[in-house]
Length: 480
Image 1 (spheres, rainbow, N blue to C red):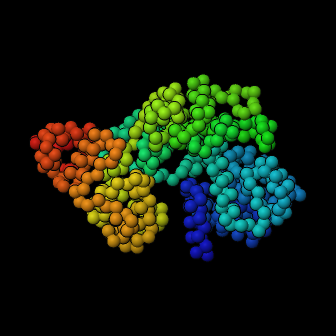
Image 2 (image 1 turned 90 degrees about the vertical axis):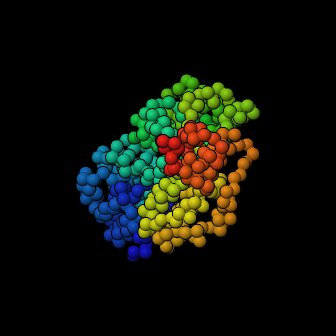
Image 3 (image 1 turned 180 degrees about the vertical axis):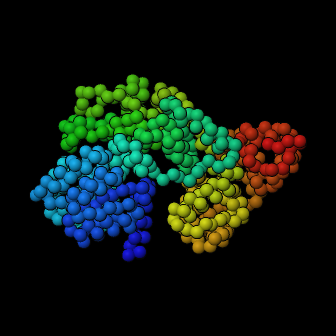
């Protein structure tokens, strides 16, 4: 039983980023064995489960406790399940229902969902199918729930902190906190893996809209033939296959935040549609005669230069002006290697807790290696490597011998300094200063002498490039 519990808990953790210990589920089945089996699957997945075989007791429990979800066995030939749904929803309107029956037909499933259930499953219950259905029901609940207690339970687990101690990232963090309290449109740019979505979610969480949905849209996946429906929704009969009304992303994000991922990949038609909403603040669902107002904050991100895309005719200039009211640039990890020790520590603590591993540390040699790597995948790549090592290495201290061979082979020789085509002079200068302080000397006075600049000039450049945490030696009578 313990192995079964561990297996389903791991499966649940993989399927959802919601903490299952905060989710309350009620199981009602007149068959005691079946009720116990379903309850054990959910309990083993980490949910807080109450099990009963009597409908009257289920109603009494619902009056005492706010349930996210009710899993109810029912007979399609009776109305007890519908009556229970109506009764409990007069107490807690946001509670979702999954109905289970031995009479598993398509018509039964359609009728169950039409009458208010989120999903229908047939007996015997498939554990993996049940867990997946629960996850989807909770994801749906996160979008539609009005009750604040429910919403607090459904908040996603926090990601490990990507803001370490460098002056550059501290300045970005302070700027984000200022922007978050407003409704201004934000454009976040940076290479893949620098943490753009984490920053966007952080802005949402710190805003007055944090109790409302954060809806992410992959712009590259919005094809022109379904683009308007995806963004603005449609009504029944709007086109072939539209058998019911469907909310679009703007409707789902009402009073919340709409996150436009990789906005540079949005088609020109999509750009025109988006621009119209940003200018007028209104939209019309496909096939509808009713105009709706968009009360949504827009946060867009890109790993491309929108200015270059505009010059090449791939991005609308007027849309660019609408999006970059406030721009946040996230630097690549190779330009802030001084943050790596704190990032590694933060990631290690996070994943040791998440995967129930004893506390682990990374040796100083490993940290130095990490600081010399180019990190094409940026913070995401570093995070994934730390997670892999935390999970696979049994020792408390992780050393050079534990690193993947492909990673070690990409380590630059000590003192090596590479210049990549396309780098600006400022980037070259910043990297040269960083490499000197990391690999040659941590004393800033010595570094200034080696670089052939004055101490005051080095102090200015350290501040300019966000390298203030590098080097602890003195510069004249003061330290930076």
